[in-house]
Image (cartoon, rainbow, N blue to C red):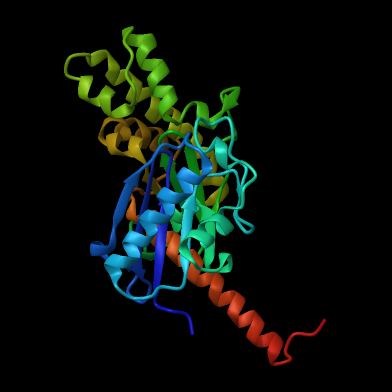
Length: 307
């Protein structure tokens, strides 16, 4: 029997968040949420120790044994094996080539086979499909707009990484237009000032009204990019998350107008769960994968699988 409780983990570029999830009710147990910042350029042992400490703290707040963990993490990672291939991204360089499942399992005193990993954008999409802005829809496209450009699709069962960050767009690739670094570079070009992120640009809008053009350009470009995908994917809804999505009010008119001009009227929704979407999605991925594995083993033992 698969337990109804799974610890969901979201590993980002500067933090780890862990929480126990009730999979029968598809909800995060709020009192178990633990968020810990970390130095992602630290030595591997330091990173693993912080990860393990956050997960242990969440489990202690739950107060009961949990035997399954789902982890949402950016790539490149061999998620099935747990081997990290991240490098030259100014984060987690020390983890390159290491088995994340084995390292964490040893620190948490659980088998590596009890830990499941999946792409962070796919986990975000799964969480929103299960209990957020995508609930009840059969086909979804989801995007996490932030430091990178994450994308995922959901076709009625499992969400999967859409891997659109390197899709060609305007003679370059999509991530160069739909990530924080585009806003940082363009804001400096327009204003001559350096802003570290999109939030600081939004805060500067009252004093620097010319920066509004940034969001209009972003909305138009994103609308053009989505137009091709909508024709290909035929989604029922598009779900947006990530830090840039917090500024949706500043680029939504341009985005929707661009879609309307192409005769495409697919609803665009903001994430309802925020960071909790990735936690719920990671836990859901772990439970569903374990269930499939368990059923497969049981069928084999019953003699219903022949080799």
